[in-house]
Image 1 (cartoon, one colour):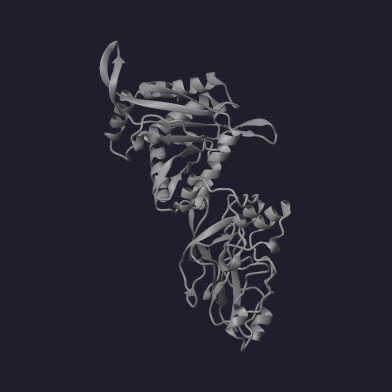
Image 2 (tube, helix red, strand yellow):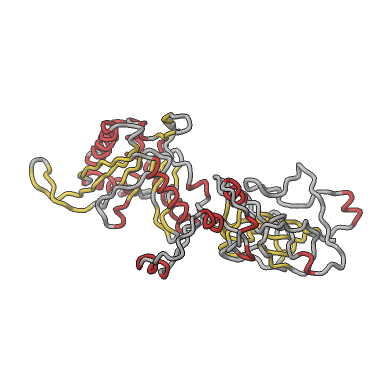
Length: 440
């Protein structure tokens, strides 16, 4: 008889605790192979296709598209193969890929308890299959019934919601959930924590207009960006300094490099190479602040983040060990990560672990900016557009290719002298690339 296995939303890594179902890739009744992607989800950091470690027939799906599920919540159940009772006695571990995506997959190190389909059971018996105690996400179920534990009295899945309620003395049984099938969400608990407005208080015109306007949930990538930027402003005492630089010689050097056969080198790659050289001279800007230990931690490697605009919003992929890469290698890695970002295929690991960020906002046609530091980093270099401007060159007025450079830095890790020294070195390399060669 077929064995019904439950596949739960795996831990996608990097501290992610939940994901939103964007698109189901299979339907109830479909036959799936081992490691076949079954659902596309959006986390706070990336779009991810989640593969199922089991092969068989999909008997249930949990959650509609647009539903947000916590890690560990059931995604689908799969009826795996057909075995006879003697075979079941001889083997206690189901077949599967053996792959583990940070906490899920078939683990043959522990014997799995075999769950059998009850002959002749009605379809309604499996309505909550695999949901576990307390879950209230209604699955789409195939006509196969599975024996499961009874549902709990509280319609809540997320352990974070339970903790929030417990820490604030909120009785979950007294709340009415706004999620699917009455599921209690974080927003329901937060609403219960807010004091009720006086019944007779007039509604301000601005508030009434806001109530009628379009509401866009701060979740997924947009929510993660909002939280990170807010945290940066709360925790980091930032300051910004800037300088105009004559980039004519840098652009000429790039043209000469690209005149030689081989991969083309981008302006961003040259600026990145200049940044890594500047960070070697001013390592305090390649650091982070450990508030718990009350220490500044200077980091040995430069993991360079760069801003990439996509249809999903602003993303900051990270080039690992940028200090070891040539301009050619940097160009190739920038192109690879940008393509993945625009296709929505960046892994969470591609978006974390940065130590310094290079922000080329000149692509938007602007000259300057005071960017917010990418927490928990200590600095960000901003680059405006490179355009012809009047410039005093060798004592005479000339038209040169000019760019504005701005450095936003954490004033806890260094004073203005180090920040100014870093920015001046970058500007000197832009104006005269031979300065960079001298330091190599």
